[in-house]
Image (cartoon, rainbow, N blue to C red; front, side, top):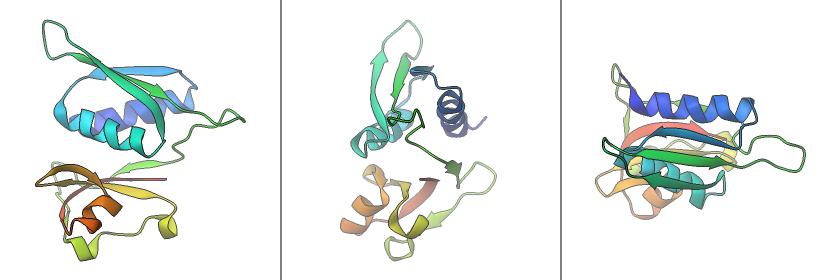
Length: 129
C-alpha cells in the first residue's frame, strides 16, 4: 500500500471538506513532507503524538479569507509501481514557478528549490499548487 499517496489524499479530502485538522499515522517520510508544507505556508502546523504503536500525526490545515484551502491541487508523481527519478537539472517547474514539487533526496525530503540550490536530485514524490 502506498502510504504517501494515502497521506496526500487525506490532506486533499480534508481540505475539500473544510476540516480544521486531519489525523494520519506518523512516519519520518510523512513528517518530512509535512515539514516542507509548513515551511512553505501551505499548512498551519503539524504535531506528532506518540502512542503504543507508531504514533499519530495531526496536520492543521490552512485556509484563506474566502475559506479556500491553501493547497489547490496535490498530485502523487512517483509511486510504487512506477518510480520517477530526476537529476537536479531536470527538476520540473510546476505552474511556471507558482507551484512546487517535493523530492526525496539522499539528504532527506526537500522542496524543488532547496534541491536545486544544493545540486541534488532524487525521487520526485509529488507536485502541488
